Image 1 (cartoon, rainbow, N blue to C red):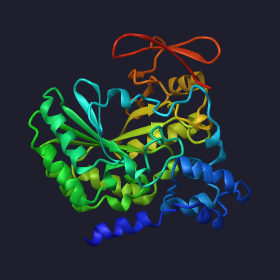
Image 2 (spheres, one colour; image 1 turned 120 degrees about the vertical axis):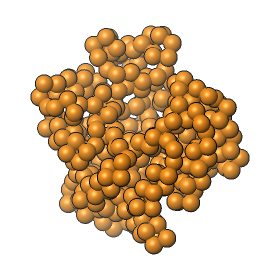
Image 3 (cartoon, rainbow, N blue to C red; image 1 turned 90 degrees about the vertical axis):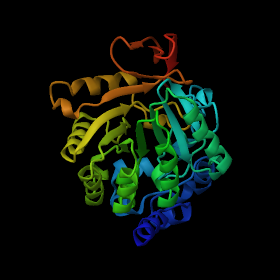
Length: 355
């Protein structure tokens, strides 16, 4: 209980209001009225762990977590549900886009709210959380579909659940014989590393499933000593950790920054898995670099760094048309910032414009 209190205490120290951000001189007081509109659209939670670094002008961290009036700039191409989760939702909380795996969105709470979030239309709003009946219906859906080999726990951040709630979830998944793999998508190792306790490890290990952690980390600045210790605890206990990142303007969009991120991950026993191009979520244009530039950046890594360090560069085709690994055949440049992709779901040709 003491350990759980520790991480809950650390979570509560995160900054969740404009007044506190203003007190720390982290926002322009002349923009308060506009930033209130930003907060109305998408909540704030700045990890206390990063506060001093942000106050010392760490722009890689500040841009990820400090709200900006740029979030009020919407482009016609941007969507409320950019990757089409709702299109593939048979029951609340489940996204079943691919035959052998489902997303199970167990909470819409996060330990930090990333300003580029592609689920910002739902994340941070507790009204979207599953009721007991919703949860039972989601579990029954997984039980009834014997082709589901993997469940990906996401949200929100599933590791913000209490140990008791998480244990209840895992115990129910444990009983599903055709389910073999549980993957957990989380920001916790970097933004709330105190959550990674021995008790959490024991809960994860006490399943008959293969457990994988996909840690979302975008910059070397997030690899604090606390983060490294949390990762080490997971790995030493036999829980593999993958790296998921997003290519973000002014954060990791140079070869030097990206190489440093990927090498640091591997040095800490994390395998780079996916690096995503930012989804067309409303109010996130200021995080995107031109797709052509991103393709060139990822291509430039080949032959320069170990293959262990190289992730797949992924685009989630807007509208729920599936994700593709970007290569010259899968992403064809057209005119006026338009690109043509082939959906992996049905082979259809999709044209997308990135503002």
